[in-house]
Amino acid sequence: MTAAEHQDDGFDAFLGELRDGQGYYYGCSNDHSLLPPRRACSHCGDRDLQRKPLPEVGTIVTHTTVFVPTAEFEDDAPYVTAIAEFGPVRLTGIIRGTDRSGIEIGQSVAVSVELDETGTERKITFRPT
Image (cartoon, rainbow, N blue to C red; front, side, top):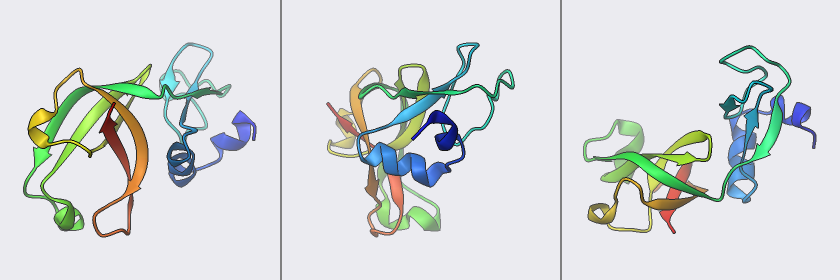
């Protein structure tokens, strides 16, 4: 599939590829980096976006533990939400596979897509490496 075809895909397609270990982001000719779905660079308007592979390992830049969630995430609480940097882009996801007290800024994580605790919604998920 070409980058142009992926530019028409939505977030669900991005999650599917991320789940399959084929995560990607877009780069424009002015070196801006974007996550799909995008048809143009949100920084400069460039429409010549190139698909680039997402690094396999990222670094946690911030995190928080949610004890009192909205109704949509009630079955998942408590959970840790984090922002992790994967090369030139940042993803927001839920951290799994470790005790909450062991999560640190600067920690390396791998990204995947997993179902929430109710098994109904796909979520970007980080696991320590």
